[in-house]
Length: 383
Image (cartoon, one colour):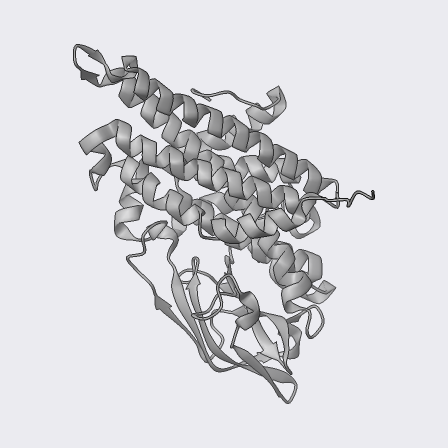
């Protein structure tokens, strides 16, 4: 790592540097072009599969690499350093992988996990709808009994990598209760409509996924009927928040390194821009934010790995702090670069747009502010 305080052990830093080498070879040089084109090439996703990254949360018996949560976090930081759109693909794929691993029966695990582990099949998380974003209980997609299967009807929106995914984890109302279904892309009645031109993570290939009496077999049901939102979606969303938290650390680290390089090389008023104290202040805030966010993410990883009762609060705090720190770092990066920061072909403006998305996805900043306050332990004192 070229800038900032590591906050990592030697072993953790070696793991991060290994992933960073992959990112610097396969992702970072092309991130701006992918942002303009609005897509992540399938070859890059395949490369992540070959590297074992897509099998990060899948048991070894199904071909996965079975990383612990800290190792998974470091992977997300490294990918997020290079491109938040690519990290978004890793996030939703891992959410699907985790759900099938944890809640799938033996037949479902054998059917789906080997392909998900290698990247032969890439997963997308189909929960959000036009009227169901933060309030996921409002989903309107329905699943009706149909002989030995189900008919899915409804529309999902803003589905990350929906344009390229091979399998969707779909949440729908079934007999008035929420249930989860594993649905292959080639299922009749399933239609994918691209969503282009979003503010940030433009290469993550968002889509609207429509289900028109889409028939799936009984074996598509993941877990028990009515088991969809709690615990299947809740557990998967925790994985998503954790991934986004670490990805935000990577984005902020990218801002820090980019800003340091520009400030030391760009000259104004007789010397490097870096010599101006207000620029030094901006970089100081960036470096401190990166280090603090990484420490919160490390703490969250330890809590999740250990099954601590405070793990949910730890993940929420990490995501809240890391995403808001990343946006501040990205805003200051544009400021330090001046007109160059607004160049549509440059990295600062992409990082700025992507960072704003981090404050919205997997729990908006405002939702987190209300939820974290409720999770703070309190013991009433008796007089």
